[in-house]
Length: 97
Image (cartoon, rainbow, N blue to C red; front, side, top):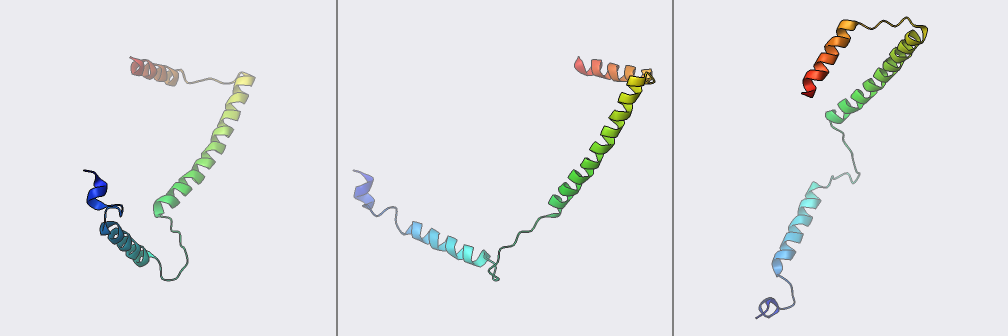
């Protein structure tokens, strides 16, 4: 016995049509009555945009700081804080083990 003998060639039956009609009704109800599309961005997206803009300002400050450090190194006047360097090295070594 095969499935064709049970259902014939007409598919599963009226369930497919019922689902399709129900989905069409939901789509019609969800559609706006004005007939125009609208896009709304949440507050989160606006916050992301603001954060990206703020980060761009940080890059400018970083590049200015790097330029000043390069000038100090070139002139021989750069004197790093040895305690900060040692603390950073100890932290790096402790994390590596």
